[in-house]
Image (cartoon, rainbow, N blue to C red; front, side, top):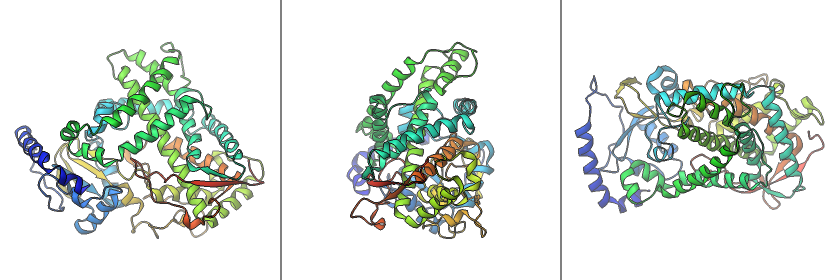
Length: 498
């Protein structure tokens, strides 16, 4: 990253001078003089980018926090950004600032993709409307209750049948992502896809390519220097792939029969969106562009997060066979042969539940998603002006040595008390916290439990022939999320399968 930036210093010089002059001309004096947290001295134009790694930048930020404290300032190019590390600082920001830290900063690539619409990278009234609608609709579709659990178990049986075809031979880890992706598609479109369906295959391929592109240094550079990035066309590969995703989604949307306004409960998220758009009119908060933005957000986030987490869970079971054996012993004892897990079984499966939570803690799938102050905000004793980007570093919470006995080790005992009962520490925040907590948390929790428990009940996951458990690669692959690296496992059938 540093070499790439230095190679572009000539262009950056002109860009930086122009941007700085424009910023000064347009600046607004806050009601009180800001008081910024400490941080490393920035270099001209590039700020502190030379101190951050190309990948897994959260570790570089955690190292800086050891020198500057849990609340500090970094300069991403010319942009001042406040970073929060550790449970106490992050919790105060997410739960103690009310309405003042709900917005997203206008990240360049997502502004080009969504234009401030959708659920995840929007702010203000559009975000509130989209989120309230999504929460209400998911509840109406049975998320967190029996109807959705039945659909997940149907998908579990399809996944187990797919793994049966390998007869214990190595299978690509990515196969495990098909089931959670299909659960999302069933929720969105009211139908599941065959695993070989061209639409299903194309969507998963494109989502994978988009996630990889979003994590590349060129897109990171575009976000820091959007005008220079636009000049160099750094964002074009992502936008081309996104447009391919939109083309598929338009076809799926067009295939849905438009429900009659006020006809009652919708059968899918898309049906509910279309009906909402009809009820509010073409110029309301659910115009055609907003419908597409919400569907795109749900497709991208709903498939990537749960899919990657299930793959991580399987990979870590292959790497820790003693943990896997203990999970299977508990499943055999509680469920018995032939009975698939149900959501209500979680209470009777404390170790299985602890392992699944430890997977989510250990991998930190989405280390940070930035916020933005909606007003002058006092945070950690510092006064931040309106519009300040703030990064609550969730990875620093999930690895906080004051909260976890062995934060850098995979250790399910983090979620068990002295009597072996499941406990959930307050520092377990993989879905964030507060009013902007992940909208799909309830679905993800149910989905992961049923798929993980059913998978381990039916199969033992082992490394491929010639490779020891220690040889399995757990270094995250470069992408927008911390996804597992591509590799193979063996799924050996068990007699107790559901």
